[in-house]
Each structure stands twice: as C-alpha cells, then as structure tokens.
Image (cartoon, rainbow over the protein chains, first blue to last red):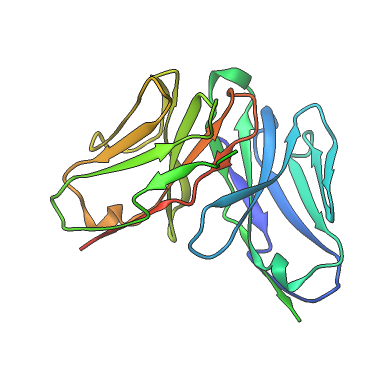
Length: 115
Length: 112
C-alpha cells in the first residue's frame, strides 16, 4: 500500500530564505508526482507535475526533483516571500498510467514566511 | 479558460439528511475525481469518473455515490449524513488520466 510522508509538518522561515520541502513515498512504482499548495479553507493549486521518467521540473522560483529509486521528492523554493505562506502537499499517482487518476496525498507541510 | 467550479461552496445539513454536490470540470476535460479532506484523515480519494463511467472507488461506505453526465459535469451524493461526514469535498479534473489534475475551490459541508 502506497504511503506518502511529508517532513517537516510545519516550517517557519524569514522572508528571503531559500527552503526545501520533503516528500517520501513507499512504493517507487509511480506514474507521476504532483506538488500543490493550499491556502486556508481553499482548494488546491497545482504547482508542478513530474512524470516518473523526469528528474526535475522548474517553474519560476520553484524547483521540484524526483528520485524514484529512493522514493523521494523535494520542492525547493527560492527567495521565499510572505505570499508563499500556505500548506504544501505532494501527491503520487500509481504506475498504471491511464488506468486511474487516483492520487495518494501526503499530510502536507505548513509553511509560514515571516516578513 | 474557466477553472473547475463546485457548487454550493458551503452547506449545513442535519444528521440523517442527504446532500448532493456538483462539480463542473474545465472545458474539454473528461476525467473528474472527488476527494474528502478532513483535519484527521487528510485528503482521501472518493471516486473518479471518465466519460460517464466510474473507473475507481475509494474506501468509503455505500452512502457515498456519484455520477458523471455526458457534458462531463459530475455530482456526488451522500445519504444518511453522519457527523463524521463534515469535511471539505474537493473535485479535480484533467484532460485524460495521464495529465495534470486541477482542483476546484471545494464544498465545505457541515453536518450538525
């Protein structure tokens, strides 16, 4: 059974700092991994999608890496800003590809960027 | 292009009642999935639909059901509501199963 863990559960950093969020999964047979952010009481905003054949994806100040063999992904946020404060969630889709769209979510990291 | 929309945004129901939530996917998207989010259990998969067919179902009781219409809009229904059904219900859509999924703003259901 796939399990997804995110460490740390909460993180507080001063504005301008670079930071790394971690995501671990127990079954390396994944199809892709997606990072989301969630603001309080809101839906999920997709940040980055990494296919299983890829090693990393970048979007602006965000960079996500994937190491399937070790069951790990990291989300790097450069030059953090107060507007980055949110809960960050990673989710994996199992390796059957088109057979299912089911995502297994981690428990999230609550990020607070202090001005 | 409009995003995923969910209605209603907020709902208060009494134990024993039933409720229907609606989700309109991004135009052209054919896959719709539903998730329940609670503080204790996090985000849990309910079910997914593709071209009006349920393709996968999570580990939830039969009180939870859903359907998808020919225009890809989807509804989920919860019958005989329990206090533990209070949650944020999120809907996600994608073009096909291999693609990135986009989530709606959710429906906040409170059962009293």
